[in-house]
Image (cartoon, rainbow, N blue to C red):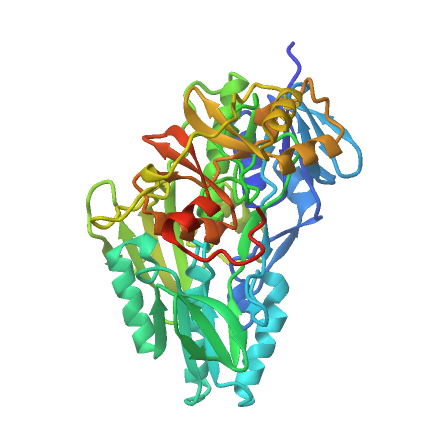
Length: 529
């Protein structure tokens, strides 16, 4: 009799539980599943916004009990490193856990972006938000701004916050309160398509919420919120969404922001039998429903590895969003692939009609005692999600582009080169980074900081490979990108060198100094060269 395959799942959130439940259904008795999570409880976070207004509760569940019900074990610890060659995960407490398949589902860390603002991360900030509501009731604040930071693509909670604040003020007769919403989006909830944007504009107008699209909050002081690219808004209080950063895991290729690149089956590129799902992945939408869909794809691939499933379904993202407003429910569906313009409905479009949508997790939670099946009133949207593309911009006539200034980079390495080999070549060439190319395709960059992190972990320089320690999917631009847009991109991501590609193939690199000279921009002091 063959021994059961051992599946290790790093994390205790939506993706981790969804994958555990999926594996339990796909391969009952064929797998030994263990969750490694740093927290003993699973938090149902989607209702955190409503809790501050007395319209819902942020529930939590004992994670050990949930794991047991799903046929898995739970270890309270966290994975900090992966030895892919030995099929072992290293934990913060010093344990070394072997695996046949490893799923990274450890989420991301929210970070504040605006000093002086109330950054709303979830259940832990409901008391602070309730205090803000109390200030409104007492007349201590009348000018409220809700801000979406640059880079945050899941902006729906910002609209929830603005709408629920407005509804609270209307019901309390707080006519002097003015609410504004600032977002970098060109249209409200632009990802959902024009019909959703139009419906949301009507909602915002009905609640007298001033909408500022194409801007983001840069600085708050003296009762004024400075916007970029220009302008200011009077503000007594600002509620901002956080940006997310992935947890660093040694031995796993990650982007500059700590995210992991996966394929359509959620396999980590370059690491055998390692998968990732949820917020830690490079997929730009950080949302529970998307995390559950990725977890299902990863579970199917793991089951196929165990030969209990023949044809695993790949990750095909469909976004379902429930916007809490306090008004009557309205549901909107848009099938992008079929070319439909969208349809508005008054009835739920999925069941259970919960805020968190997961094929296995939603009904699993609904079966537990005292869990509400019915969501608060809101607007539901379901659309197909398109993947992001590389930064490109059609230059204006006569504008110079990166094709005019790009130069070959002296050091291009392969993902299977050893760290020792690359470090020696970097020293000889006196450069601080190496571009990583896989048959001509740019897949990463290995910087001196990456090497320092690896050597601090006491890895063997003659055995560890570039792929395991490189920064995956580095920020890059095409040869058609204008010099102005390229410089703006470098400032946005705080980088001094920008890889340049053409049709996915590596062309070279351009430095900030080259761009500033070409544009005749004063560099000042402290660029770091």
